[in-house]
Amino acid sequence: MWQEILITEVTHMREDRVCIAGINHEGVVVRPLFCYPYLVRQDDLFLADGSVIRPRTVLRMNLEPMTGCEKPHTEDYLWSDVAQTRLLRWANDAVWKQFLIRTSAKSVEAVFETEILKHRTVRPGTGERSLGTVKPKTVFDFCFRLIEREGQERRDYRLSFYDAADECYAAVKINDLSLQAYADHLLRQGQTLEAVSATIQKQLKQRDLWLRLGLTRPFEGHCWLQITGIYTFPDYLKGRTFADFW
Image 1 (cartoon, rainbow, N blue to C red):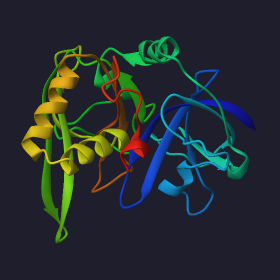
Image 2: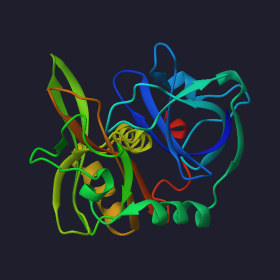
Image 3: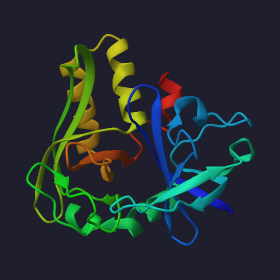
Image 4: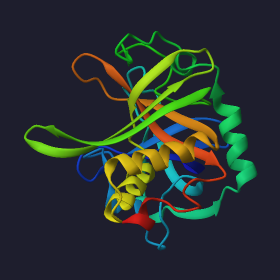
């Protein structure tokens, strides 16, 4: 079924794989996936008409609910006729902010409607959704660092915050593709990891901030909390997105 979808987040997974999500005019949240091999890749973000799939774009997409979805990942939709996907318009600041306000939950736990365990995870098979919005009460740390995993050096992006229920969420992994591209861009320009961390932390703390949150697919018996989108007013990226930093 062809629908108009407001893209709400584009997140980086492993290697060149990405995850996109959006919302239709009825308020239904969707996560477009391919029939096979399911995962979207970075090249798929660039449409035939030359536009880029990015937050705040409204796209015409052919989507159908996927069968066999398991909680909390209730948003999976089959994306077909990909070559016919088209950019229709952009959401202006007023529309974008209204979306964030309207979808905000009172706490992180309220986003998913299930218990958040001590390691910031959710039990597979529980919860009503895997995506949602919160407005943090306070941000107290942003950390950009290099870590070694599986014999390779990888970049790691983390945010620590309190939600409106005064619950502390420390060092939550950030998979927002634009935030990662921006931090990498500052690093390439000669800033140290510490300087990049300080710059972005200051920008986030000085602006009106919303977070999009998500849950990973089950891994080691848990669905892990992650930050899938970071949005501020005024925009800390000044209208830019991941493609502008590549």
